[in-house]
Length: 357
Image 1 (tube, rainbow, N blue to C red):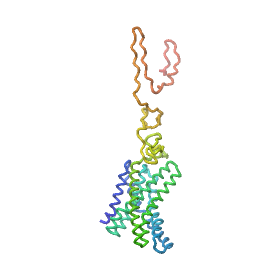
Image 2 (cartoon, rainbow, N blue to C red):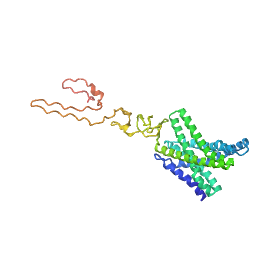
Image 3 (cartoon, rainbow, N blue to C red):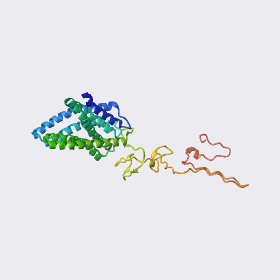
Image 4 (cartoon, one colour):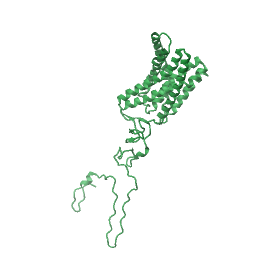
């Protein structure tokens, strides 16, 4: 029963994140591999935490709230989150299945919950039923939230690397590591600092602050998942080594209601979708565009309104020669073989050379 209670919240959150991937589901083998790789990242985290605790114990030999905060912020948080990031980067950065923006959140959550699963089993078997129930609603969603922040900025770093935007790549890649470390560190530091203070008042205030922090963290993470799932868009690989950015389905720029000029299908500032009414289908090649001319073949945008019908000949008076009907003008010049345009004049009764007809 304890083993089941340790894994039920992990499985539930994995399924929630997985089914929010609406555009293209990730291969089961890749996700299982990420889960077990996250489970294996516990080993280096334990080693790094042990080394860090020895150094911190030598620097601060007595128990205090400061020591508890430092332990959480500079040892526990970095050791666990950097291990998860290393696994995520090694397995997914150049993986061919990493072709949608929401994929990064799926990958990061599977790695993080692999770590959380083995950690939770240890805590539940040592703490019993009460520990299992408490961690079901706190620690497991907490690891999921850390992963959501990591995956969100990891996706932006991937986008920047594809577009060769070095400054954005450095910024978002750093955020994909630093933000989860800070969020995880604060999650542990509030409680560990309160416990190390050995004061009931400080501990009570720390618990209240921790509850508010956890609720806010879970709400923000949930909103990020819903928004990322709704605005999920594709990274398309073309033949050869060239790779496009998150390719828009329609051509042409558009201005969002917030005032931002965009080229992609969703606003980069507020996430609103491109209005569909601004697009049109080329009657010549079938491409979808938002320019006044087709981006593929150059055909102009069709004008709205009824098409012009061929003029009918007017009634003739007795003895008047009928007028020739007006022929509709062809939209494009007809192609004529060059040899037919240069037939030399012939003598009366002489046939043209062979090959000219």
